[in-house]
Amino acid sequence: QQPVQSPQAVILREGEDAVINCSSSKALYSVHWYRQKHGEAPVFLMILLKGGEQKGHEKISASFNEKKQQSSLYLTASQLSYSGTYFCGTVRLNDMRFGAGTRLTVKP
Amino acid sequence: NAGVTQTPKFQVLKTGQSMTLQCAQDMNHNSMYWYRQDPGMGLRLIYYSASEGTTDKGEVPNGYNVSRLNKREFSLRLESAAPSQTSVYFCASSDRLDSYEQYFGPGTRLTVT
Image 1 (cartoon, rainbow over the protein chains, first blue to last red):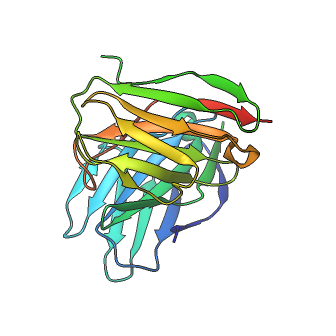
Image 2: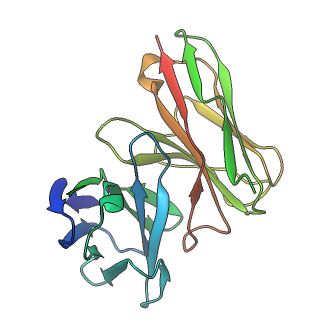
Image 3: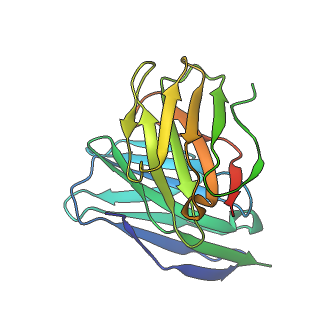
């Protein structure tokens, strides 16, 4: 089953913060976050592993609640370049599923 | 380094025709993947290859076959294209499965009429 992302879309002004959520109905091994700009390939942002390890970019933060099978991506002091669609991918037993995406628009 | 390359970038097929999408990576990654992306939906895994010589089905494998030709190359074949296979196809690679970031190719936009 695909993970569920919320919200589906969000519009921000430069400098504002946003939180994107990702939840799964099944126990997870890891959660991946990617950003995709229109017409381009997805680009890696972060991986959160069971046990608390994180791999990713310094300016991006995220959390992973293993008990609730939920992850959240925190975007602070948003910039115009943050605009795009954010996907979470959940991994269990070599099975990777992506959510439908959250479209983020940052306006000047 | 080119990263992950895919050919062709665009393709139009008629129902019943066959074609092979090519993917190559120059990062010495062990694992490779094929996804499809449809409007309003996330990426769906078609097939993956954990390492050279192995391939496994993903979420939506029906109508597709794959070949891991060597460590660098992973191809996706449509034997008899159907309109439902109209999509954007992405190839990706990673050092290993699961806990390693995936690097995506630029995509192939396929239309089946």
